[in-house]
Length: 370
Image (cartoon, rainbow, N blue to C red; front, side, top):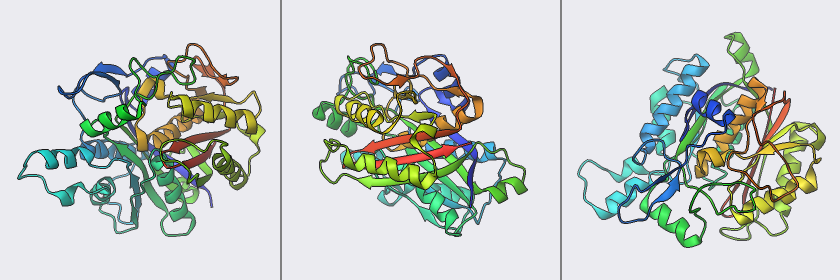
């Protein structure tokens, strides 16, 4: 059964789906030096506004945008929901722990907040899931949505991830890890400094091809397959030999029935950290031809943690639809032998991959085709 994408809702530090895509093609970045908390120093951040975003508000925006793009109106009682987040309502919990608020209730700030809010928004009685797999959450969500359709549980699923991680604890934690950049995000660059924390979210509408065609919906692309593995080796570092990640890539290709040389473009995780970028470069060199086009968009949007994989999937879908590949904004001095997209590049990809690698050794690979 073919599962297709008929709608996309997205928000990044660059704006909406259209604004983000146009800015990417122009080589622009939404990263700014900001100081959202007076007790902490300023950092380069990928913030959507001038103050930290609210998870619930951001969820509503991306879900409503996806439904509008897909030409759907609520209620949608038979549509499944799979909305994930790696941080959830952490900002609310931090506020509850430090100041009394009679209006806030802990039951409204559990990790599945985005999924529950979406379910209420579309008034569904179908399955509702809320995966949490660190920075691989977004692809986990799309993968679970694909499974709901393939198993006959639903014909349509609203899937993706939303993240509002600009909090005191997040900034302090990543700073203690030595993972935060000081000036900006430069994926695969010799002078890369670390990640830039960012807000964002992406939600896609998945449907059976039969349902999409029956209502004459625009089809962005087809979910070809996925694979999920876990290193189970270290808390914050990828497996040194990349064995588990390589297994995920091979499994995804096999399930998607495509060969490595049939992959036209790979949206890399590309966090701009020393370990991650080296890890991915070795994977590409080992498993793919030197000609495969690759890039990371985090130099433009920042790293939205659990939402980053869903955002990467959205950009893969835009590449399939527009015939242009997203450039690796922020890269000036390439440190690895990769065919990185440096400028807006006209190409008509047929098969794309999206990589996500998260803390705890979470590996998630998604294949999307025309």
